Image (cartoon, rainbow, N blue to C red):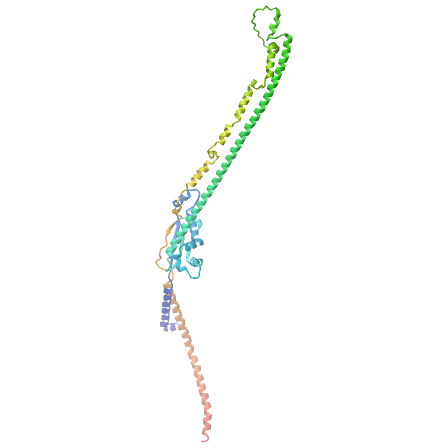
Length: 435
């Protein structure tokens, strides 16, 4: 068998070379495919320091890298970039298909993404590798760099939107606390005013009650005094005491000389009222009966009148009602005011926020990754070699069976010749006898 193959080696070599040429020609006709690659790594800590110092939005470099990777892997992000840059995808557009169908043809087989392990996203070894496979007629480098920039910008816009919403929600929360403090202050203020009014009303009521009671007391005392004076007048009249007198003067009687005498009398006992004499007692009783009010006889009445006058206007209530800057008196709002000022003064330049570090931009590849012409040509040569060997072996097998077939054919021919000779012999003998 090996001898037969070697004998027909030229045919085998021609088959191998021909098949290799055909394979190489076919590979040359295939549109070359290229691969562009871009690598992203975590940004430096100082790049996110301004955002983290807001104490509102916390984002580590590892989390930012994962978020950008998720954005690159997002169908919505890729479709948005496809819609915004349709001039870069002209070769992927096929007539009769919708934009989404054309995008699906690109997205299904062209993009590949290698995401980092979330547990290792904060390590220096964490990275994201984005690969784009594209034909020769497509500007794959611009597509990949544009897609990466689009995803980063979209994630940056998302961070800006999140920060805006969080700040707005925080301001609403603080405003709610501020309004609660205001409501609490107003309630406390109203309660205090009402308490002061109530206290004033109670004090006024007590003073008025005391005044009524005092007036009643003074009237009673005046009536008692009149009664005492009436009794004393009767006694004085019975004793004949017309003018004010003393017990000692009465003791001297009428026998005393009529000269002018000055007496000094010291006693530790109160003299009876009738010693005042009838004239004095009647004069006092007459005045007491003509009296219309007794308030002036007691200093407490004037004191009550003064206190009632003071209670007509409560200066503390007036001060509470006349406050101009009531928010100064809100309890516990000073930290809230400081937080409101801080949140409203936040000025983070998110347009230049660097979420990731572009470790490698996509560059034009030096050579296509497909088709591999040398490999295809070698495979063609191998197939051609196999084809030549198979043909030679089949021919050898066919030729090895050919002699036995030729012998059988010759025997059959000889048999037919003999039979024809036998058939011709009797006829020849019959023809010769009459002669």
